[in-house]
Image 1: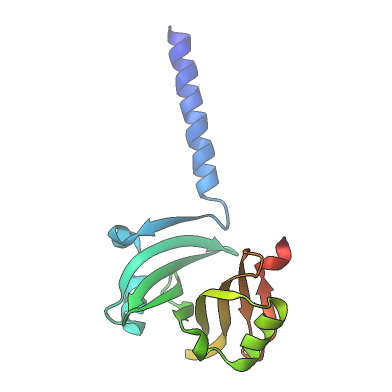
Image 2: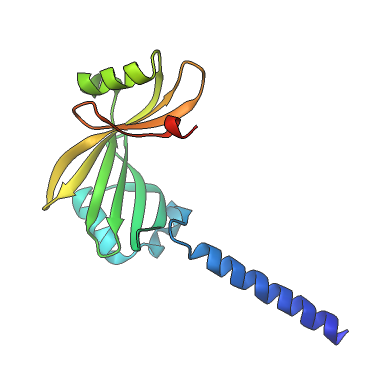
Length: 170
């Protein structure tokens, strides 16, 4: 009986250690909802509220990217979906704002149409990087449905150069 109890405790301890290891892996993120906002560090929230006053957080994740802790925060502002990546020290890495197809520059539309004729856009985000404290247009992230009903995410520079394409991984 004591041996069975020790065996169960060892199994529990092993499972706990494995879970702790898994959740600390680089690149691992766990999505949180707006009720967990008190878990976001003060510098991150202060930066968010300074850059985007009255932002209503819908969800967020804490991510480990190249040994940096990044808070990926999604929220709405003035009826638009916005996402931002903020480092634990409060420095904004970049932010994305939802836009309509009509707002996408012609070179970007042309590049996507050439690669995915007759695509249907599902979501378009304008990506803005923060460089030397200034907003700099970095590109456009387009989630689309291809003509053969595959969901693809394409990131395109303002000049039309395709930077990333999840459809190429298939």
